[in-house]
Image 1 (cartoon, rainbow, N blue to C red):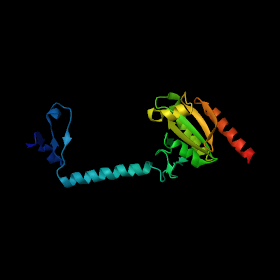
Image 2: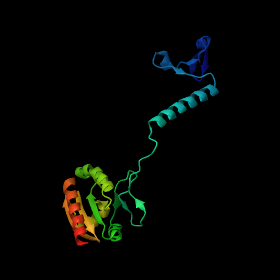
Image 3: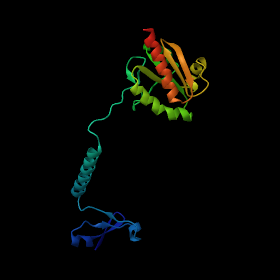
Image 4: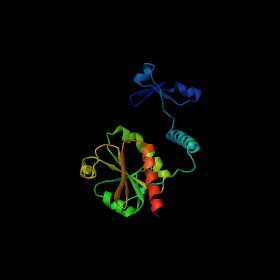
Length: 199
């Protein structure tokens, strides 16, 4: 026996075997797909709840019990923690740059001047984030040398991306160009040794 649900015929032959009826669409008639219609809304809801519970159980099995927290690289101008959601570097702009340096005092600040289109900038960035987590004695920040920060970049003599400038007491103490992590680490270590020697 065949009945109609919407435009799809329902075959009730499946009832004799104790199964839910099948809805056959015109596509199914050509042998491509069969869609099952449950005998009641309650059964469909029950099966959906069981499916959801199974998915939730699998997610809970594979998910760690704790979420790793990545320390932020720096504090924002207003003193609150800031940075990207993934624990990335705090991004400064022409309006916040000098105020941030002033607030840091004699703490060494490494500024990464980058551009969005710079391949080496993108390659070294994850290493900078990792370094910022390891070196808590140094603050790492970034400045995008885009149109809105062009004046700042020109005033600081930024001609190549990436350029790294190191500041202490709002004064530039060292700089380098290029995505050379070993050279940057050596520059940071040198500046920290100079500070230790002067104290």
